[in-house]
Amino acid sequence: DEALRPDAVLLTAAVSACERGAQWEVALSLLGDVPREGPRAQGGRFRQGIGLDAPGAGAVPAFNSAISACEKAGRWREALAVLAGVQDEGLPLDIVSFNAAISACEKGREW
Image (cartoon, rainbow, N blue to C red; front, top):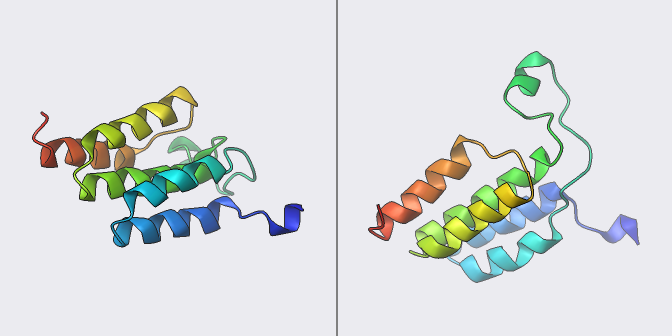
């Protein structure tokens, strides 16, 4: 039933909670349920110019939280795997995505 299906906002909150609770594995397991398509953000040219109206943009915060969860757990390989997966799906990455991945590599001393 569609009414019982969690949306990107709810799943992002869940992944973010996993990030704060040091549950990186659970965070990664939730990513498969995050909808890649759906309503786009509403706004003017500014929002369009920074990709907030792009298809899949609503899923990016969940992936960013998952990358951060991996970073905090010292799991740089997994953080980079999430980043690569987002790129493979053609979702619009943002500066948070790259900063979290860079931070994961830094903490893992992989630079």
